[in-house]
Length: 186
Image (cartoon, rainbow, N blue to C red):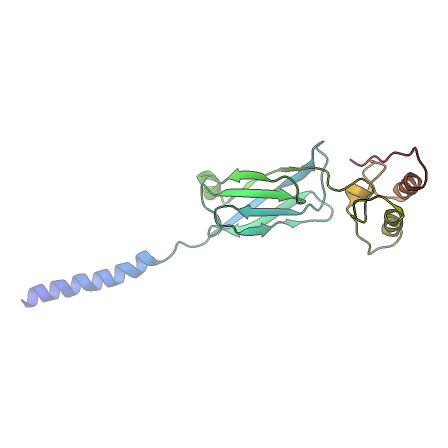
């Protein structure tokens, strides 16, 4: 009887030691998602607002962006994404793009997802009130002349030359004040 009791005790000790080891969660590993954002014509869209939503868990991740670049990235972990998860990418609150995560991407620790965004906002509407008027001219002039003002440069580049400067202020003022002028946002 003592032999059976010793064997049962030894088996119990082994089970007690094995079960906690099996219950340990897998260690979390970094998972990087990155890419570049361009408009429909291929021009870079600097400092884009990129929101990534895991449609399977409903977790949202805001990508890190840079004022002088169309690059974005977000570092999450393997706890936030799995193979087969559907990720939704939204740029500047525009039409979203979906991507299904593959096992190869999980194994690689991330993936590149380049995005295309539509032009947002009404050309010349730097105040974002859905009308182009004198308020837009004043804000654009302040943006060009004084540091600290912010606008969506895509709506402020009314000359379409890729730079927001005094030429844009003059064209916008003429557009608001005189018929016959046309704006050329890209």
